[in-house]
Length: 58
Image (cartoon, rainbow, N blue to C red):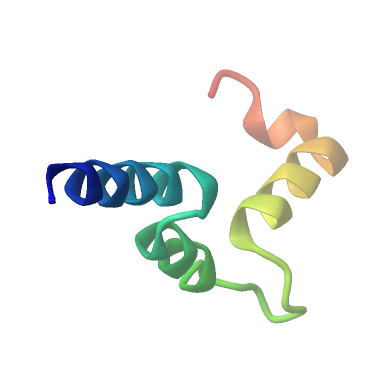
């Protein structure tokens, strides 16, 4: 019985490292989007590239 418990704990440990957690997946799915469907952070990054003078000193 002890051996089965150790095997179960090992499998649980590996599964946590091999598959992304559901919380991380949920966070990815809940990111706010702009009107064109891209992520807000991506829109800000592109805006910084197009208009660097707006972001001087930040």
